[in-house]
Length: 196
Image (tube, helix red, strand yellow):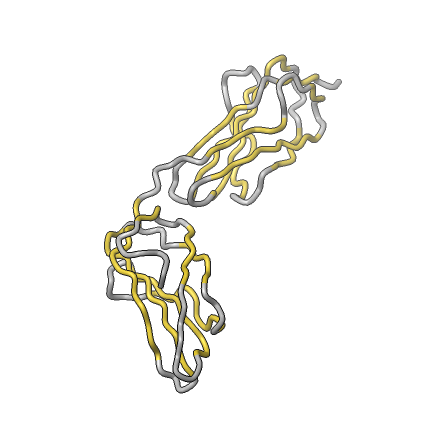
């Protein structure tokens, strides 16, 4: 195993690339990747990888530990198993909040009440996004829930524009990562014209 190396630190739940190489006097037929948070009990991450595989991206467990151990196994045609270990991997708590930007609505956008509008935003995180929530402030100050439970993979939401008059409404997107950290962004002030 050439990467990661012993003693390396990662955020719990982060993705990392494992680089490895296996040989046998006859032939390697498959490979397995396992991880242990206590150095004793291993959990399978990948089983039966092709013999030609030499690198793969894995998602590390969402558990903090200072005793993480990575195990790569190679199996030959006779069923013999050889393995290599990388010990003392540190999985640290993720404390970094997601970064969120609202793309639409933009400042001074004019919307009509009782129409549909797509709120568009971008979000990123060092580990992974779990969900988004959208709030609205018709008066530009007091936010109330608008849409909850938006999947972490989504970056837009179609909404029904409230049929109210607003001179400086705001949208807020709150993004939660897989560790529970939250980041948020507010849109520029936009207008809503009530429809009779």
